[in-house]
Length: 59
Image (cartoon, rainbow, N blue to C red; front, side, top):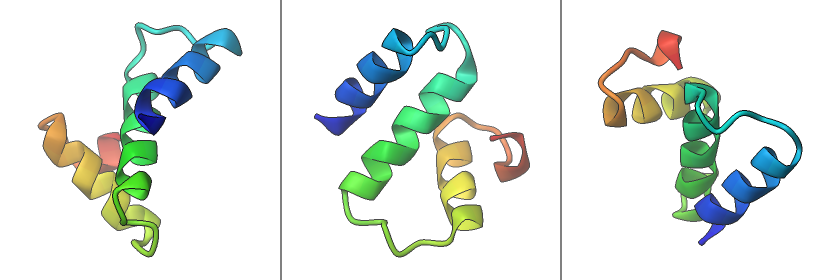
């Protein structure tokens, strides 16, 4: 799964696994992999925010 691969790459690059940004980035990669590649970035933020019960501006 691309989400797991992206997480491994980011951690190997030095991104701490404990920050929410890592979860948000890997979630975005997963959404793109499932066919949302034509979605605007703002809509992507909103979609990720829904999964984590936060607003899109917090993502």
